[in-house]
Length: 387
Image 1 (cartoon, helix red, strand yellow):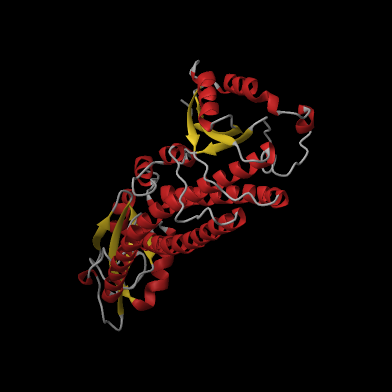
Image 2: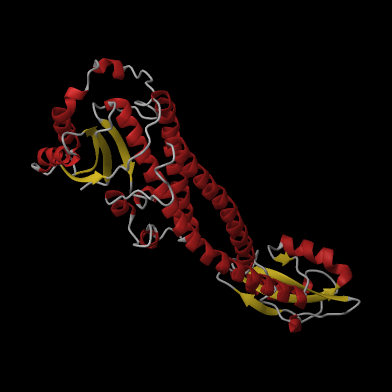
């Protein structure tokens, strides 16, 4: 099976089931597809002019809502779940039954509590649009807040790792590594490449005058460098730094401060606590609001199917909507079968549509034209997050 799904709508016969069974016999005989009835509620038709205007609006709204759902999943996948596809699949569920998007779609039921069918089609679309806009705005605020904390935490954490040339030294050095409180003496920290450690021991006391002998020891080391301390008279510091540069020794700009180390450690703990709190809340919020946005998208598609079907097939309302899941490599044959069944619906010269004339309610936001109402569904929110 492919991950591609279609919605089609065709005129009903004496009963919707009769038309559906006809499609199933024609498509399932050669295992071209698996089909499901899409339940369309009794909706208010309104005027023809209102349907034509609404058709274009619904197409744009459908595109917008799909975009919001994709933003939610992309943020969920990349920023919250660290590109873990299995965890994403576990969280992209809808409603109290925990249906995945495919099952929710193939077993779709209109939510009468949220979207009363006594409302006009325009009012229903406005309700859905307003709710989706709120979700998008909330996502923007929540993602900015979370990423700000996450980036601040990463900035602090990066200072605690990496090369001795660049990393924060507060958690490495100790008070006993320094001469503190002296009016004349100062202790510096010097990064020396491991291959030059013997050079350092042989040279450091003679790099300039007024270096206190035998005051240098290894404070820390990593894969590439050793960190030494050395004590000298303050007035020779500039000369000492210059001589170190000449000998490829790097003096770190560092002032020992016990409070700074404590403050940084406390800040990291504070940021990590805040990140964990935001993370837990975001997982819950994203899970709920993916469901809300996906459900909104399906309800808009149902409105589109209804509007397009009335515009195509006229009144009284008599059509059947079918969700079709094509089998792999069967798309062309499936189209041929559907054309054989419903080609009679095309009363126009197909060349008109090949010229891409804009016909409201038929070609809005889509280039493909078929004799029957057709929409393609994007249901694989896991695969679409591949990079």
